[in-house]
Amino acid sequence: MSGQLRPIVEGVLLVFATLLPIVNPFGGAPVFLAMTADVTAAARRALATRVALNALVLLLFSIFVGTYVLDFFGLSVPIVQVGGGLVVCALGWDLLRQEATVMNPSPVREASATDFETRAFYPLTLPLTVGPGTISVAITLGAHRSGSGVHSFVVNGASDLIGVTLIAATILVCYRYADAMLRLLGPTGTSVLVRLSAFILLCIGVQIFWNGASALVGSLAIVRAP
Image (cartoon, rainbow, N blue to C red; front, side, top):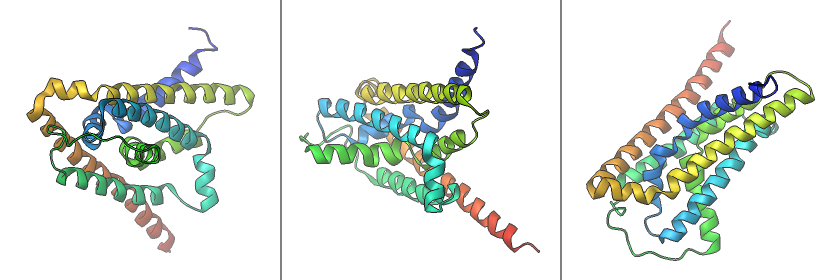
């Protein structure tokens, strides 16, 4: 492998391998399906495309300027984790209590343009797909770029762009073909998978909240130490 390409490939693998388990589009697909059970198949595919694009923009924004935004508002990553963890917990709890409409969906409806855009971003992109845990990790990746100068900026920027694009492509494939998952698993299997995914989402929210709360409590202990 060329010496010029090796740093880019290594950077792409780092970004992809770090973000994919946290984004987890494979586990999010049945939840996405449950939350779009009341729209047409064509609208669901359009929503999958929009969510993937939103995730791409949100991840790139977090990597490149997330640190500066938090500094501007005087926020810390633990604060983002606490607030975002609560949102993820609420989403997971709502899904656990939701009626099983994926197997017997309600009559489909045509969403307005405003409803479509709003729904695609919240809650389908944030916090379902790109949650506070993902954002905090993306910010950390951007804050710990190695090297300086134009060459490092180009290499790191290309690595981040390609890696995040691969993540967005994975999200698109998983969400776009969520219907095929339903047909493959059947009603019972889909119901079990949706409930399990919702419970895991609730646990993830608790873990994100705990990580942020622990960091905040630890910082208080350090401040109060003599």
